[in-house]
Image 1 (cartoon, rainbow, N blue to C red):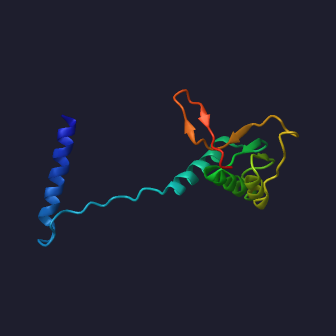
Image 2: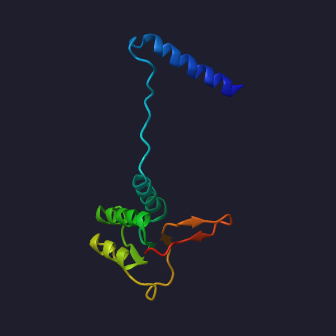
Image 3: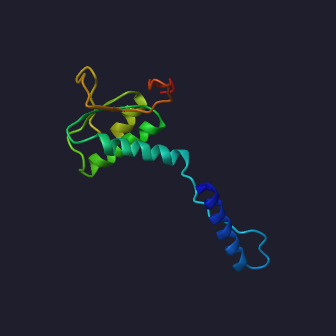
Length: 138
């Protein structure tokens, strides 16, 4: 019943709007918000991972890939502006290492610090048991 009422309300609204539209208009127009691009969504996820899970003084694993690159970018921003302090990061690839160095993120290795507080990386697949699969692209 709710679906029928909703459809009726939308139809009524559209027909009322049509009554005030110029006669040349053949159908009402509906404004549609643009969906964020895949890159924008990856950026949001990467930034949110740092914002939600990293605090000053942590040892952080930095993953590889397009989404992880946004997390590295965010970590660099927050270190630069002083929001985060005393972070030590372990990169998972040469590409991530180079990006982190460019952003001034202090780096170490798992040989020096074998326990990390958090590791941030993307997964290419998630199976029904919530096992994550990381691709071999990095």
